[in-house]
Image (cartoon, rainbow, N blue to C red; front, side):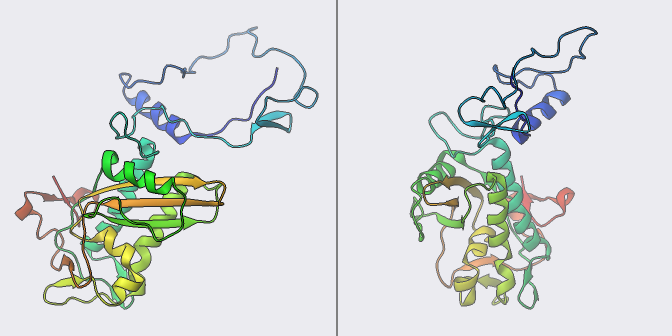
Length: 284
């Protein structure tokens, strides 16, 4: 009997964690819970030839007497299920979607709390930034359609009233979550390349912000409230592509955000400050 190498799957881990906390949380039908202790004299496995003498199944290779898959694909049917309606798909797991929100709101929170760095120190504080929510059915679904074409930049947003950011990684073996983390770090740190100045109570999309920090502007503008992303591994071309849509549009010399004290503008839009998470963002 062949034994296979085990792969750690964060999607299965999260499902197990949630079920440990609440037994009403489902697990996929083709999964099973292993919580039993083997009994004395109970058989642990069936004996047979090792994979050295008896080849592994197609798609696997024998390494140190264990069958190892050439490439492991994380489970996609774990709970919680992705935030997508039937017939809509961004190719992301729930954990990846939550990673998008955490990463995006991290950089927005830096700007809203006074800790976003720019070329000469710190950027002026944004007084009203929404905590982004995730949209699969439109923003994510159509981000996937663009990413799956595996074309070369520039990329055009699917809708005229959206903006798009992209990040290309010359590696098809990178984990998709790691690709998201690399993309958001690249976008979020563009502010360090520019001098963000307050003009007439605001910060504007102009000058070197357009040429050096366009992705940062799209990520952090107060005009945004919703995001949706996709990650595609373009095997034949040898790169991984991250695409994100935002539900806004702006052009050169438009205001990106108004300057003021953290969360000073939240009350006017019937929101409160996310003080429990560090402050800087307006939440319901």
